[in-house]
Length: 109
Image (cartoon, rainbow, N blue to C red; front, side, top):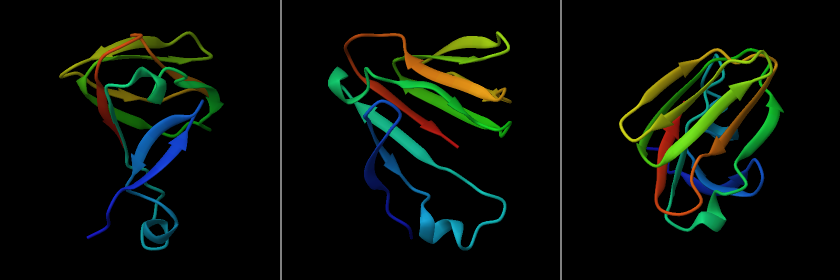
């Protein structure tokens, strides 16, 4: 059992990260498992501005709220509660909330 640990990523977004240094020692290839779950917009409003992904895949499942995923090649979409998105991002990628208040809850692998 590996417990999630509170941390911050992006522009100060509060998340719980299941994968970290300990888990990466036993996993190959690299695996990231993050959860965002807050009804306080201060915890998520900064989102995850444009950042490099070097082409790796993301799978995002939203339980509540709305997030916009976008890459530098013009690929984008909004995912909402109950949606799953598999994305092969370009070199630069962003994930930004599409709401200013309310519950935002989702997972990304």
